[in-house]
Length: 340
Image: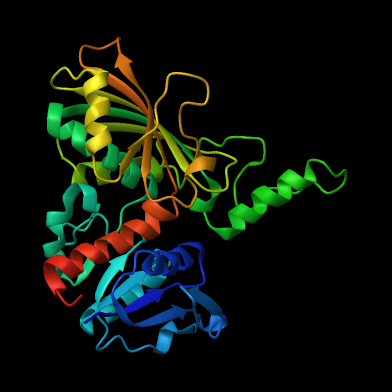
């Protein structure tokens, strides 16, 4: 016996990936509905070898449905997620709306799957920020071994994290660089993204940091350990899909890079690609369409007593969003709903 599953925001980048991954992983679906805004109602989307027509989110009745994967913005989620939850459907939300609510679990299954039982508080589970998700997958097994004190992370985040319009802007600006008179002014981003990097993601805070940087701090503490100190610099780069991170870790105990490599090779959700030679590491282009969080460039940080550096790459539309949501649904089904 399978589940009745709803994908909300099925015409967007993340919603489409949710449908793809549900099919790829053979999630036990008895019935599936693809929802979108009224203006997109009737749009066709793919679910495995099936074609679904989107239904109107505004008039949809969630009664009798088991799980709803939400891939819409916080404003719309604020309206529709409580409605679905009140009608008995468990919401797994990809927006930032519920991530910091102490009554709502924020889940990365490789890290804190046990917390999924707390969905009963409000019938809602939060999916973390894309940049946080891949980082904590890599940090968790190392933290279990040597106890992390502090993390310094610089991110190199692809434009797909902003959405389809941002991907179009990068594409059009890139083409415009080669055609005189066809230059494209920035509209999604405050500055040109083609052949450039922008050290600014989300809004600026009074501290001088950005909200994206704050998210990484707050979410790492909630998911992994509130005692870990985290500082982040988040940068948008001219890459279509795939987030990269340079991570510096300070531990309570000494951890040799070779032992760290062995630990990561055995860690769930992690693939180590680390040859100390040209090309012996992963890049965002190579991770697109893959499930894993890839770790490379593992090495000692000799400037502190117990330090390591590593490079982390993942498909942000998958592990950073859609895959993580489906993995949450899998854990929820096995541990709580028990129908599949």
